[in-house]
Image (cartoon, rainbow, N blue to C red; front, side, top):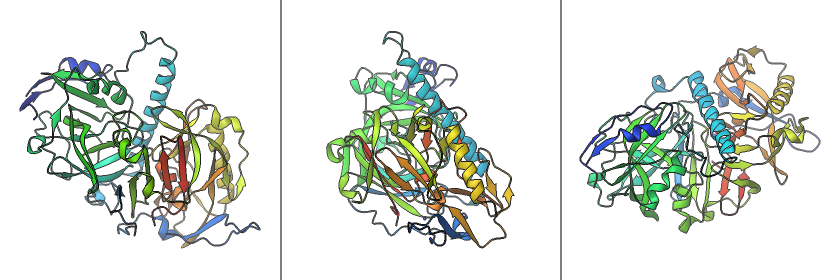
Length: 478
């Protein structure tokens, strides 16, 4: 059982570790048409404008979410989400993209920090006070069961994070508003604290980027995100229920007593990273470090599945390049309207590329983005331009059209794997008079490229972490 009272005082400043010293605890549709080339493949998406625009009506997938190891995925701000509390509470596009850039900056910081630390001896390396992780605001949620008896908790899932945490009563410092009742570990028969001197407690340093604290022998975790969101609380174990046939006792997680930030009514976060405390690692005995998902369009639903049994058989696999906290992939080229863009092979290799479920807009090396933008603008010359928004600088006023033609875009990955993007992964509609190219360029060639969640929409994406490969398939959310 948890301690009955708690007093937390800290400042998230230059050194996050400092607050531990002052913690005091007591107790997706579109039709392809036109633009077909001699090779028989469509080089344009011809779509109804209305199919691109945000919908207020949920059109859920027909996918069977009850199959083994499968969870229903919805966009947290879309009409299929029970967290959606009306249009007034949906953040503006500008705000979403601003927070997305915050996440990207955080990822670049973490990667740069790791590179710098790799040049140090172990005795010289220090854990950063600010881990640089960031939630952003364009994320997807799943609902899992926590505790005995289980209580449903809607969690943001994130391939860029490791630690799973939820808000917990008594929430003695601060808790943000969430949709479901805040979890009460005292009412669960299976909750246990992790002690300060345990090996499990020491795992938090790698998982959170911060040295754990201690409160009357109970391990205390703290994690701060790049957008100033944070969670602090007890590190414990609990029963995690993914589906009726997938129940995991003694699951390590954070029970947050002090939580603030941009979590959009979700109860916390489900970490799908590579660290040993991630859900991928903690369920490895059953699922073999294999998971897959289909991220739906905002007005539909998709799935998050664990284990190979739930994966489509028509996947193409590209290597996962290195074993690190991020999922690195090899991007070798981009095709626009069926033709390869003129991009030097070295452009994508300079800083490498990751795939990330939490980044909204794909970030490309400057030279790659310049080539894509120039080709896209040439293909869209018949449409009037519109002002940009935030990081999106190539936009069009399509309000006078009922049908529009968008050039196809495909990414080519290592091993010759070509992945065509859904039209909703090519353009980002703010409104009919402002439909934008859904990509952005990094500030420098030395910044890592990120394949974001808008581009992943409706694709089957399978992570064979143990096998060191990543699979792609089309039409995954149907």
